[in-house]
Image (cartoon, rainbow over all chains, first blue to last red; front, side, top):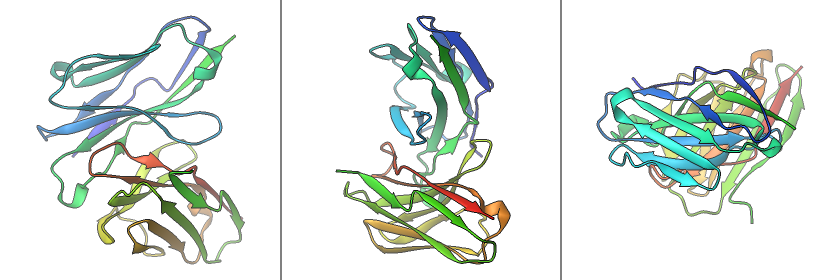
Length: 118
Length: 111
């Protein structure tokens, strides 16, 4: 069974600080996909990134970066020089590629509430 | 143009009523989903349809019935609403394991 754990329930930082959101996953599949979504106070779910299990390259997009390590089953997300607009709930999610009755299913972590203070 | 749109955005209703939430996607995706977000923000899949065929049904009470008239639409009908059904319901669509795009959510409050 697949599982995603985001151990940090809430994080509070001051603007311009760097912050890392942790994500640990469990799966028996050798092929799987990892995702991060952002849920701002307005409530919608915004896709941030997808990573497949074959690609362990770290990725950087502006102030966002992601560190995928299969050896520790982790897919951590770092925001550099945080801003107030980064305040949101961030979800890590896993999708197994085995298909069948789980085709496309996203299993989400519990979410991390990030508050960035001015 | 909204990629995944669901209506209504807010729904307040009394216990025992029947209600529907509609969802439409204009992305040409082959798979659509319903997710439920509870009061603690936990997101869990309820159903998925691939090309109008039910693929996932995650131990949801049979008071919840999804209906997919075509690939672009997936509606959720809920019978005999209970207080515990209060939550935010998200519709989503994807092409296989490409990222799922979510609608803006429907906040259902049962009183």
